[in-house]
Length: 85
Image 1 (cartoon, helix red, strand yellow):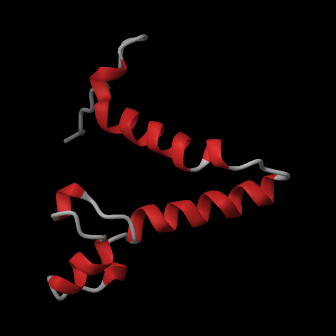
Image 2 (cartoon, rainbow, N blue to C red):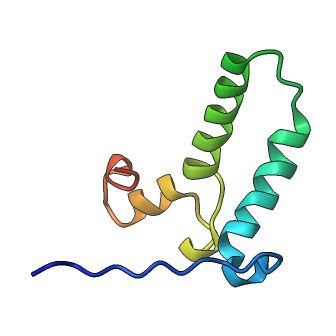
């Protein structure tokens, strides 16, 4: 039996149809891209990777009771490595 997938696209000029990614994009621009002057592609990759690691492990998340994912995992007795497979 074939799987049927239907794609839904966001209408042009309607960013509110996907508020989560718009929120992330704004945060990424404000906290990372607007703060740095990249001198090369490898420099940009290093800075963005450092920001991504901080965002995914150290920054508090409202969905986790304002705990960073690492502390939340420890509180639940989970391995932090299992959170971002």
